[in-house]
Image (cartoon, rainbow, N blue to C red; front, side):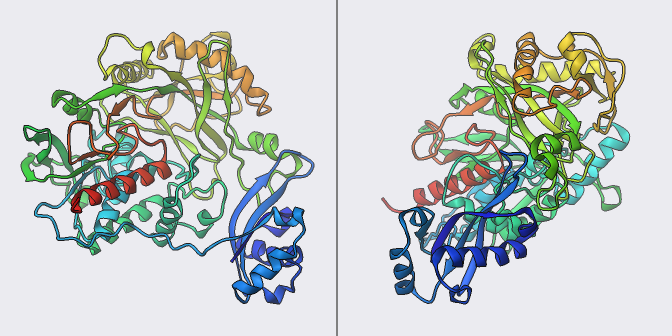
Length: 562
């Protein structure tokens, strides 16, 4: 098979996969100096948008094509010019797969804590290997979780166990479902194919900036749970880890889980009224994929003597612009073409004070969501559906918080800073989960806002117009003011004075690392595998899922005879 890169397509040639393949067949055949009928098969592997010149926005694609046989492919490669040859290479067909285990089934089945992307893929990998894992998740399944979130918006009564942070799929379920990653790993293709098999659109297999959408993700993660169960795994919701028992050498002996029955189906979304039951589960291997907001787990690990360290994280606000403003800035006159869709952006600035300012989790055509998981705190996040058809664009606008910025020596100092800002935001919003908001022009001038301009905030519980200095530490507020003018150089219109800032964005990443050794086990705790964003080893859906598979492989390797 031959892989052909840097194939340029006009926008009209690339409105969908079929159009790309039709145009690609012609252009690949021309580059290879063969007749189109000689291409026995052709596959679109990647499609990206080149918008560096606003008067020449076009698509750049990579295709894989098969000729009659390997001999013919070698002949074609041999007669290409040097310039042509730089764009063509022979590749082997891929068949990504989950790890294999052929040994005896262990006495105790492995336990996976947390059903975010890291935990889901860890449990799926273990189930595919025949190890019948137990996956526990403190929140609800997708249907009941959606009802709990809707109930919070309707009544302003938060369920601390089932919300935008906790439940099947983790925080990623109520997001844009972005699958971009800055790393390369053979597992990435496997993860994408798993999502497609579970109901995600095929375009994530070739889009350079793939996303699933918050309207599709619930069914995707539900199908992955069904696949785990079909392979012998067990998945329990409303099951929260409350203790870990270790032997004298630090190895795992058991976990204690608190179970709460979900509310009756007729009252989906209501917190359970039955008292909790507690169960001790004997196990000697556990993947701990608790997520970046599992503060109770961090506190448990600290009490039980695990090695925790502070790590750099980020805090700030959510910023909203009109999506059409972003489209014009990114695509010029081509904005609105069906091959382009709503324009994303990714920005970073490095002011002289050395504290980075950057966008994160940008949601084209999306909305700001109410992401609190603790009573008395306001947290923002962003989401967009698969069509990305909303009026506004939104993104986290963040400033780094370094370990040396935090007081004292506690590894949980970052958690306390997050919590302090969330409670301040709750108070500034009026104490009913409304969020504090400010116009960008007013924020830069350090004056309170009194109402919106052309950009209407999308936070569903309403906003209280105020000054965000009331809820942000001076280092964050000053860092934003230093960095925002620099971002205008990257995206024209970014500093529009009526752009809306909503606070606080405090959960972009974990402030804690659960230190693990070269086998992926927690330091000094054989059999316990800290995993994903909550443990400090991932930063998004793809990297979390990849780390889940990596930890499953490490667990499986520990079962094999040395």
